[in-house]
Image: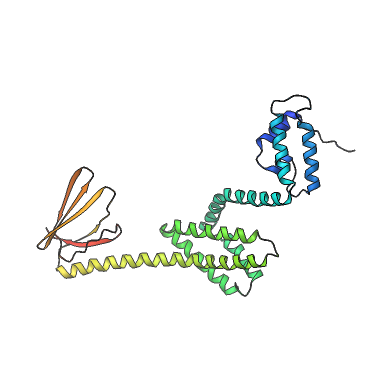
Length: 291
């Protein structure tokens, strides 16, 4: 026994057409529809919502124009191809933030699903570029990155940027056609570069921070050795906006004056003449203060 599908009434269909943004949903047709199928869907809906067809509806003209506009775009192959590309890019851009959050949560939980999928696909298609040894080295590097994030939380932003870069390039690569060999090779090389560069950038940032801390400790030890005793203080000078630093020196002492907005604040300290002042907002200065 055949079941007949109930036709939507005019008011419901008009509300549906006016509320949709996707052209395929306006026509009620799937994205894989042929040109003849699109025409059939257009004729089917236009007969229902036509302004001259009873019952009368105040929004029927707007809905019919919207339906006709959608069909005029999708019936032309060039305009349809352009719309398909643009709509898929917008959907990817809107879902990109959520996808990156998922990748980061997987990374923090120890599940390297994104990197694993990327490496397996590259290994199958280009074994001469990404072999088993490369896959093992990359996995170890990402495990090291995860330990650094969980222990310090300092490089979380940097790793988030690197993972989002890998996700973006991999999405472009997986969306290409099988016979688009040139673009696939170009994005494959780019994907290998960004995947291998992620642990390197994080490791480089880690060593730079360790080097800055070592130089700061060494400067403090040298200050103690030069003056032969006393109290050692670490002074971090950070000049904020609307703050004018001035320096006066006399004899073996330095007086630092800071002018903030409309009032003066005076900070006086006796330091050795070898104290180096730097206003780059980042340097950590060690000096001996004598009482």
